[in-house]
Length: 98
Image (cartoon, rainbow, N blue to C red; front, top):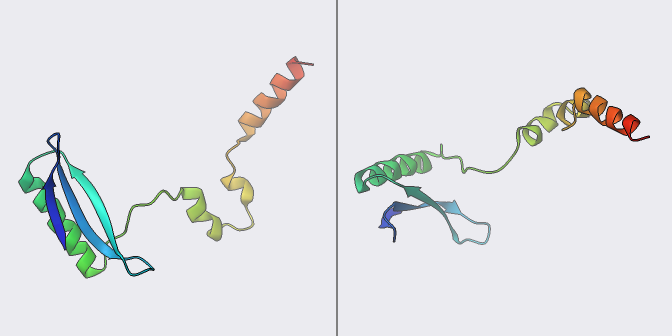
């Protein structure tokens, strides 16, 4: 189920039901399309096709590190944010300040 709505300032908004929440309420996805209404309808039909076939994957903010962590449990240094170069730079700055 979905709808195409006209935005207040011009762009079109698509509202698509993408499943149910654990408490039974509908889960909706809001998407803005800046082109024509036909483009918005085309995009809505693509999303609905994926939802109905079970191929829709909801976008999220997972990082590559959080995805790879279960696959590389013995290598935490691979996922750290500091590199050897940054460590050397930090040590050089500390030695200058002494």
